[in-house]
Amino acid sequence: MADRPRMMGDEFTLADPYALVFFPLGRELGLPIMELENIVAMRNRMVERPAARRALELEKSVLLSI
Image (cartoon, rainbow, N blue to C red; front, top):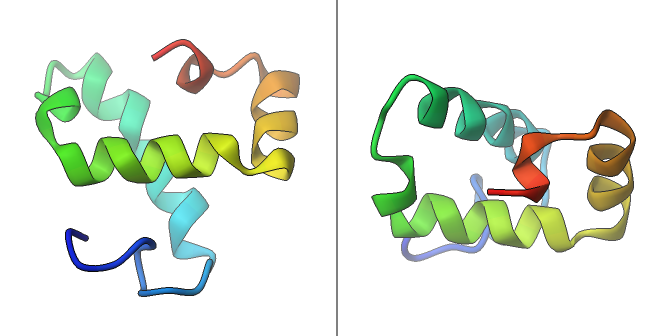
């Protein structure tokens, strides 16, 4: 992901929100998810999307507090 903004390249696809699901799971399992700079950057970009933020707020997702 170092050379592209999204999972599949430049375009937002279903793979992007799907990958986001695994971010808190990895953290909960004790994986060094916060050390994976490209994954953290992807998470940050996703959370900044207005529709994604609204959905995460409705879910009271831990992704908003990580």
